[in-house]
Image (tube, rainbow, N blue to C red; front, side, top):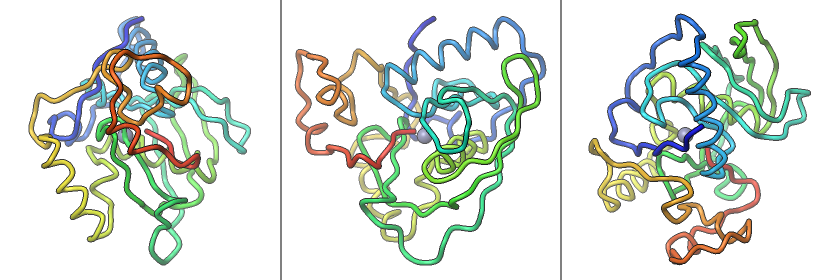
Length: 217
Ligand SMILES: [Zn+2]
């Protein structure tokens, strides 16, 4: 298993529809093992294959839930539909979302509370479940990746302007940017949370300390 670099907004594979997996072979099994390894090294709770530069319809998660679904899992060729988001503006604390492909940033986004999820597991068996709350958010976020959308594409006008400025200021939004989990300082400041002692301290990451409800997908 190998930790792979996570590509950043602007990389074309993040902005186009991913292709269906035709056969679950050793190559796919290796890819999924690498996805779990990369997600864990990045302290993410979800990862879609395009985020490691592979345009295939696969995502993984590692997230406790109230829905009776295993805390860690993978879906091949998934299909996700969600309930309509409640009206009103998203709460900047309770509904702030982050993405490993927009490292260090987070913006509020309202999502549907309930998601219906289907797909195949790594053995090709059909899987179906209902996800609620933050797990439903995770499913919607990862499924969006397979359609070529980032959560930035769904923000309201005000957050969208802020996000565009942040992406521009970071020098992203063009191909070729990536970061390496476990090597580069953790962009979301998890280095502090889990007590890992990294030599270089990223003060940016400290400034972006996360609310406990916030998850990086
Ligand atoms: Zn993401």
